[in-house]
Length: 360
Image (cartoon, rainbow, N blue to C red; front, side, top):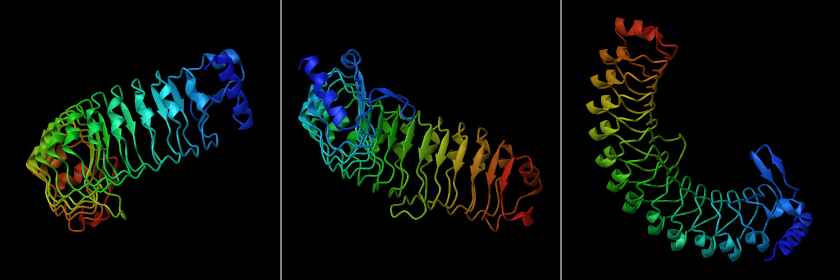
């Protein structure tokens, strides 16, 4: 479609739909709107029409030579097939709309690196997803997906995958093929088990499994050698909750772990190998069923923030005084008693929460 015709049609559409002239939007940190200047229009590489009260998008928009298209925070129910014309598109943001499905032509955009479809009404993804061979980020948060197509696991360049707040009941072993993955967010689903193949995600840095239905961790979790953040916790009041009672000794193999959240589970003990998590700086074990900690706990010398509140602790290992904490929570451990050395140690910590000061 000739540039003059495109310009005129989109200018008229923009005027009729109260689309602003191109201007800087501080909230999005980028320019937003459709320029009324022809030269600016013909050189457009990025179109941002977020928060424009749109219910549909004119097909002419998809004949521009765009690398970025942002249509978030509208009420768009359908994308036209013409989206397949954006051959050079690298980023598409359709978050917070009303999409129930997406056209297959979307998956002809082989140069796409970032695809954001969060907060829509998607119930499935087409098999053509596998065509997005350059995709690095796929955001599917807050949809109604009950499963992921096997073709997704062929996206060899994918670095970030988020399926937070969907209806997933299981994760396919195929996930092990996503070896470039650095961030995986499966929070707020119904997942009862992690496949052994999770072990091949050796580049994974952040893994969020909060509010699922896990009863155990596979020993293969030790394969996540570069993992820095792991969240296996629960939010109180959620219907879906992890119910971990034990951790495999292999968790000690996560030697690069920096943050670990296990709060609101049913953990009764920790393996001796837990002390191998030498780089751990933040650990939340609150609201579990711990009555003791392993001696190796004293080896966590990088730890700065430790939450042991709401457990059944009666004593702490003497080695715990090796820790140079900035924050410690021991609240609601009614039978906990500290020895003299631990009493002096606890006085060196900047922030302490404990409602049993009479036991000091």
